[in-house]
Amino acid sequence: MKEKETQIYKFGRGGSCIYIPMDIFKDSAFPFEINEKVRMRIDGRKLIIEKLKEEVKETQTP
Image (cartoon, rainbow, N blue to C red; front, side):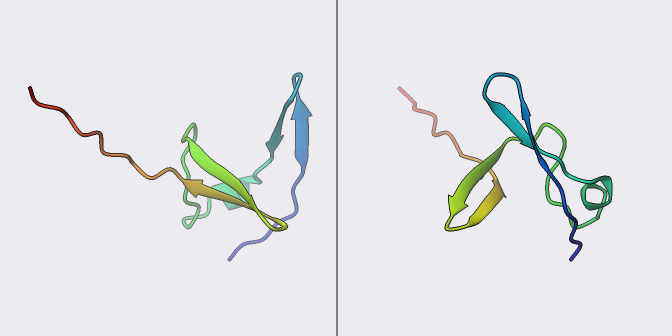
């Protein structure tokens, strides 16, 4: 498991971003792609970022 210090940056009027260092991003175990939507939640003192589960939309037949 790779580990690296990083920073949280403020931008715009209310947004922020977490910088992901290149060696973490390029690691073969890194689970995300550029522009991929993710789910973020706070669990105690941890920030958890997960892939969105693909929702299967049910189609209604008349």
